[in-house]
Image (tube, rainbow, N blue to C red):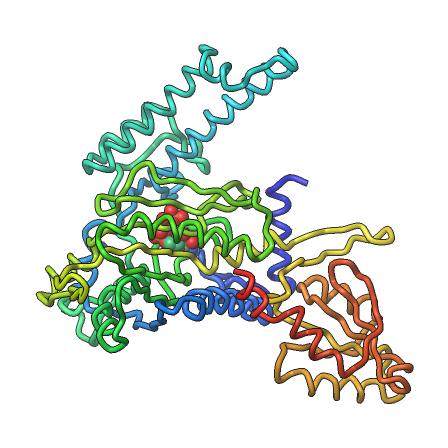
Length: 511
Ligand code: ATP
């Protein structure tokens, strides 16, 4: 199965089993906006909770925050978002489709890269075991020429974006003969900058003076509360503030399901530290965050670091954690060392001092910041991609989500074998006992096999079957999702088993 087939399967599975629905589905959906269904909301809450607890409970010096989505308009002036949070866009006059100019160019470069890979593959077949791919890439004239073309395009794109010379970027698109994937034509408009922030009004008056923005990131809510938290919490450097919440971006090219949405959720932590110590903390968080990702059971090979070659002017180090999605390695989380840029800017624009008095050195200074920023929805997508499995069982295909039990939406299904003889009543009693501590599910419809399959499909780690012996002996069959092994246990043991196997504490303790 090709990876795009696999991705299509994951998307339809997410809808069919109540994880993710298109927004306003009955009206035909709304591009790049999605709703989370009955199982999706549980999985997403669990992921969010795991992040939040691992930040706040496991670190004495990290506290939480929940700042408002609306903020004073000057915040976005100070942060640089009003003037600089732009994507270069270009329209095709024939198809009337809008594209990000940089993405069109990157896609074109990718095609050239694929040509290189083909050349290398062909050569590898030709030369056999003695083939040295690196040497071939560095010396074969055709491959070298392709690579030079890619590098040259990088240079033009970088210069055009950095100097704001958008005509250069359009020229590059024309010179390369890049066509619209829909119309196939080269009939392009000029490249223009497009601000990604959504705006609205504070009052009913549309005078333009009280323009507000829907926040495009949660970080600024943390920066403007730095002193409030530091003073009221008597926090000493280094310390962190963590929050999760909605962010909004008018993404021009919204695609790949919940990978790039217009309304999404971020989980961000800003770590305030003494200037000069930031790179040490950057290394610390870079390593800690990758460890956190791997703790959910994903093989090491699915993750990689991607160091930023081109740093934002305020950053002195930046790395992305990338995951191998069915459509390739893509960013899930960014770790950035942002110096004193943000607090410095807010000091300048608000006229309020945002400094820390260091009792050890008797001086006041603006702390430096290392941030970790992850998209909850991308983490959700990653989790679904990683968990989705199709297996042959007795000549049949079983679809199973192999989610870590601590994040699975439902922890245990209580299934009476038949709908009579007092079995539903006993099931109901077990359900009522367990529901205060675990998200449990009870069902008596359909054959037991069909019920098992439905639970596999939503990733329920345990199914408990109640049969006639249960009435006599007080025991039940517990079935494990991944191995499908079944064992007999006492009813009163169930709570301890579920706590041991599905508790988030296990994940937190192992970090
Ligand atoms: P990208 O390069 O993919 O646009 P970014 O570098 O703009 O991402 P940041 O501003 O660093 O992203 O945001 C931090 C995280 O927020 C990203 O790593 C990603 O997980 C998530 N994120 C950003 N934009 C979106 C979006 N439109 N939809 C879903 N998640 C997003």
